[in-house]
Amino acid sequence: MELNQVTLPVKNMEDAVQFYLTLGFTQIVDTPHYARFSCPDGDSTFSLSLEYGEFENHSVIYFEHEMLEELCNSLTQKGISFEQQPTEEPYLWKEAIIKDPSGNKIKLYWAGENRLSPPWKVDKRA
Image (cartoon, rainbow, N blue to C red; front, side):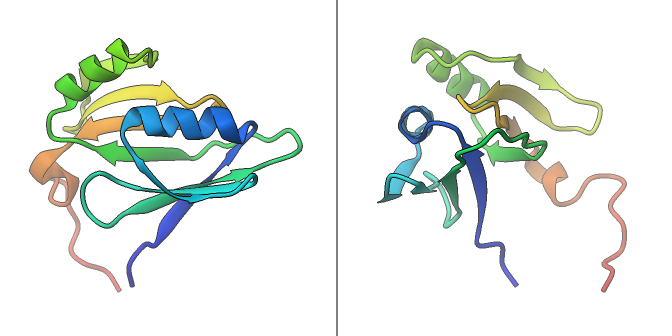
């Protein structure tokens, strides 16, 4: 089984689409209530779905990038505000935190080998 996509709720589709285009994603579906993007690397996609009422989304979406500091510097120059600049975390990932215009939390990170093989990795379970 392979993860197909994650869909984030948004309050304003136009603002959200512009935000994700600024981050460097490629839009592959464009409707007034739904947008889908492909990631610059790999085959991953994610989408946005327009919500008409109030909502709270406590999910966090992670986007991995090996040159994290350079990416964050570039995004800062493009006007993206960071809640946290790239920081070495105790779980061996370097993370930066931003929020999209709808308040969805996004972590830009680099974990290298520790993403799939941290020192505390368990045996495969089925």
